[in-house]
Length: 151
Image (cartoon, rainbow, N blue to C red):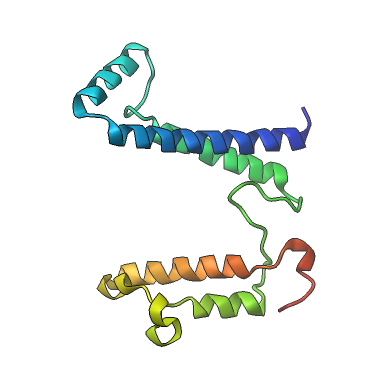
């Protein structure tokens, strides 16, 4: 099997496992407690080993391992694995600007200011700012073919 096909299969498996998790979660939301107990008993009787009825932790572990394998297989290629993005080692000017402009500020963001931010603890505010900055910088990162310029 070619490496490209293997990487494609990893990506498809990741997608299907993620969908399975969402389906299971949605179904559990709709089930009555007695239905959940009967389902859990049937799963146990079938000999399915797991910490919980949904195997969420086991599924997450497989997805993480598949991502790591796909990343290793894709090393040196311009197509990153699903959920990943190639970015320059040094951020571009646009990445830096978008990153610092993502910090919540009533003056800058006006109606788009996240009201929940003011009610967060200092640590939660710091994590919120870091996640917004990271997302903004990733969004501003140039595609690999564009990396010749700094802006």
